[in-house]
Image (cartoon, rainbow, N blue to C red):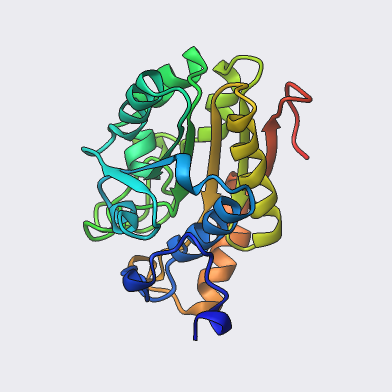
Length: 251
C-alpha cells in the first residue's frame, strides 16, 4: 500500500489518510513539499510551523519537528526560531486568511527585513475551516457565507495579490513565486527553488499556491478545476516574480 501510494519518506504513515475535506488542495501541496523534503534531505533540520485554520491539520503530517501557532503568527514564530537556531530550516505554512488578513503586518515586515525563512500560503479564496467566509483573496462576485450576493469590490476592495506585494518590498536574495495544484510539476519546481534559496542563505522565500475548496465552493470536480484555472487564473498569475538570478518578471 505504501509503495502504491508513493508516499514521501518524510510522511508520518499513522496520520494518513489526511484529515482534509474530500477534494481539498492541501493534500497535494503537502505531498509536493514532502517530496522536496526527501529529495533535498532536509528532514533532520526542518522546523515546520502551521497556522490556525485548515493548515493546522498538517501539524502531524510530517515526521519533522512541528509547532502550531496562533492565527496569523506563524511567520514571526518561525523568525524567532531561525534567529535562535540559524542552522535550522524554518517553513511557515498558512492559508490566505492567516497570511493576508490577521497576519498581513507580519508578512510585510518579514519580507521587508528579508528574514531567512520560507512561507507557503495556500490560497483557496475563502476561510475554509470556519465555514467559507469571505477572505482577502475572494474574487469579485464570488459568493461566500459572508458575501451571499457576491463580493462587491467597490465596498470591500480587490483580491489581495500576495506574491506581487511581497516582491514589491523584498530585498535582493528573496525568492517569490506563485504555483497551482493544477500544475504539480511547476509547483514542485517552485517549491524546490524556494527551499534551495533557504539552504543557500539568500533571504526570504515566499510561495503562494492556488488551491481548491470544493466543500465551501459547493462545486463538483469539473467546476472546481474550472474555477481554479479560469476564474482564479484571471487574477492570480502563476510564475516566478523574484529569484536569486533575476530581480523581477514572471517565468
